Image (cartoon, rainbow, N blue to C red; front, side):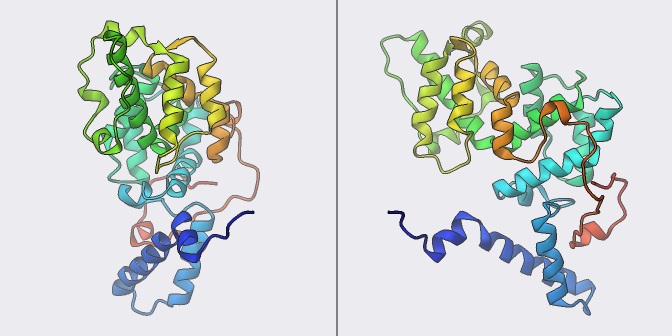
Length: 289
């Protein structure tokens, strides 16, 4: 028998209060400059924009990453705004992609784009060129599953230490310890990182850790699919496979299959009804369909 979800649990599960608070804040902020605005109309437009997944355009990064829905919506908006660049065959480097993203999110951190590049190039490569499709699906993984990727790195790092000290026990760090670790600060040798760990052991440790996770993580079937590709895996080999997984892409549900990423979107073109002051400014950004 399925237990009923209480009102508080429902609000928390769907982050309803996040959007109610943001709607009121945006209304009050907007009303300072436009005193005659009708609150009911403003709120209607706000929630219509939210429903259409256009609400993250021109918003600050902190808002973009607040909820999984916001992250997914931002990824879809980025694809809709700039897919013509990929369709024309242009290749861009990390800073150029960062400049594009800043057109729709002015304070989007360069560090996250650098992490996205590592998924593609397996190293810091600020000047290397990549296609729009490769960047888009790597960005989707990095942004949507940012906390999950950090936990995977922590687990991988501990497994690697166990490999170097076979008598040691496998230790999975707690969430509080995880926050103190950073992939860029790891001092493991290149040779050790290339050797990798057993794929089954790595994925089993991840699945065990996911039982107590309080963040979004990929579906188990996608992780098992990656596990079966090779008996051993490096951290970035694992991440690259996830970025290319169609099972993972479907689970997020905002991007088409990679083969259709440059196809025109079926439907009547529409412009987002963004109701923040930032959206009222004229911007040189292609309108999403």
